[in-house]
Length: 253
Image 1: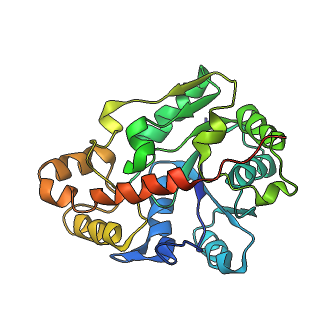
Image 2: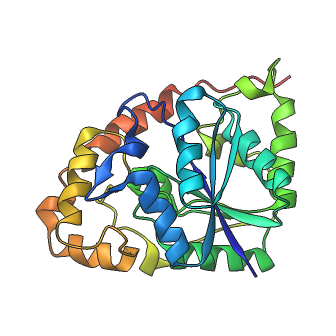
């Protein structure tokens, strides 16, 4: 069974400009995500926007000879659905390019759980700013999620901001499970997502000691032995939480 990873990425980031193109050693963040997938026999698909600024991401996909889908900027649920439909995917896992230290074994295990469920959710620790493990969807579950968006009072579905995806998933009545494989989870006081320069600085420090393609267990072991380093950017989760609270809930029809 083939494993597909939809790498959700765009260059127009508000807090850290063009963060997906920032380099660690000789590789950009987006290239790290692609190479990690390929090393683990996960088929990566770049899932980006139609914006001119994201032309560079399509060029990178051609460099690696992988597929690229370009769709809605704000509505990433629609982007995932349209991408899966275009490439006739029966199931897939979402990979956020903000989180290059994802664990490929966790992705494969999550996708395997779709034998029994329609949707696999990342752990609470992961979703609360640690480093998202991503979501595993069956085609029927992403389609149901996409259709549910039409319940909201929005003229142009492309303009509906679905960045805070958990709000929309809560309404979805399907068979779902939280994936809580402890060996793949980050510890509570570790932040390995890329939103601010301080995050980028931490990534570079980690890469001087272990491979940028390291799996989660190796990162956990390293940060456990380097506690002071691991908490350098954790305070930034407060900013992430404020953003969550500011999210303007769309109104139902």
